[in-house]
Amino acid sequence: MGLGYAMSGCALGCTELGCDYGVHITMKGAATKFSSLLPFVIKSCSDEGSCNSVTISQTGGVFACDQGSTPGFVNCKVTPAGDVDYDLAFNQIPKDDVAAITVNLRDSAYTTVFNGTASAELADIEANGPGCGVTCQRGQVLFVP
Image (cartoon, rainbow, N blue to C red; front, side, top):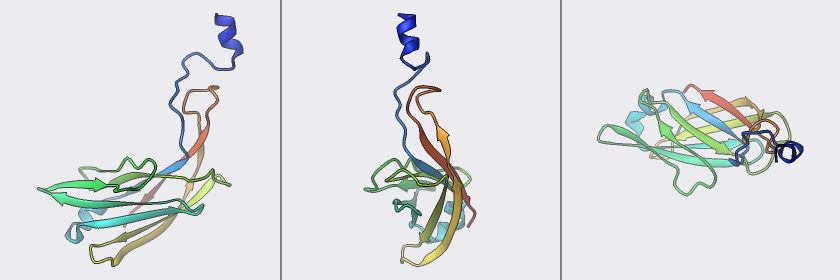
């Protein structure tokens, strides 16, 4: 049994998590800085054409992040410090190891209050473990409005 498993090319400890291409985005202090403009929407896009939107609101002093009907993984949350953290999934495999990410923050009157672009270096991730066959690329960007 051990020999057959070793010959399969998958090391012990492989998982079946799968993997998505994308970028983790942090908007440093955005919820607290723009709290007078709530609710506000952050739209994010990559240079390969993937986009998503999240809406930040507040009820009873607690910030909330809603991804609405945005497809793909978003995992949006607002930290106690007011940082807005979320993910942008790519619709297609990136052509380069760097992705340009653009964010646009609009208030409830749809006025743009912050617009920014940053580069995310994409790193290979072996989500199921080393040598387990599933590799994707992930990166992260930080915006300070």
